[in-house]
Image (cartoon, rainbow, N blue to C red; front, side):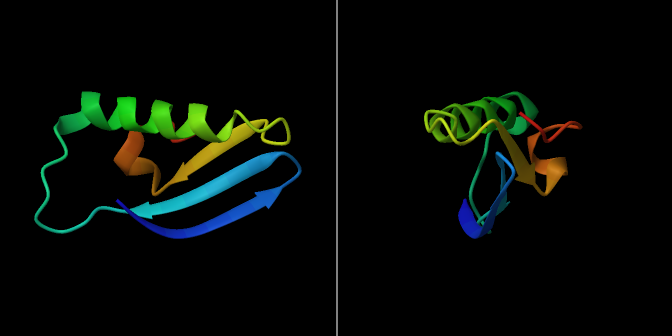
Length: 65
């Protein structure tokens, strides 16, 4: 992944990521796990109440973790 941008407002961290071309990511189940790992890492900070991953299509229908 490549980090494109982050925004933090009112306890919500929005993270925009991009897939790197030519890499294998393992399908939707693995992408969901990546999303959960990203979210859990950022939620270790007490200020972060919610994590939104963008674009949402990369991390399942919800995108909010």
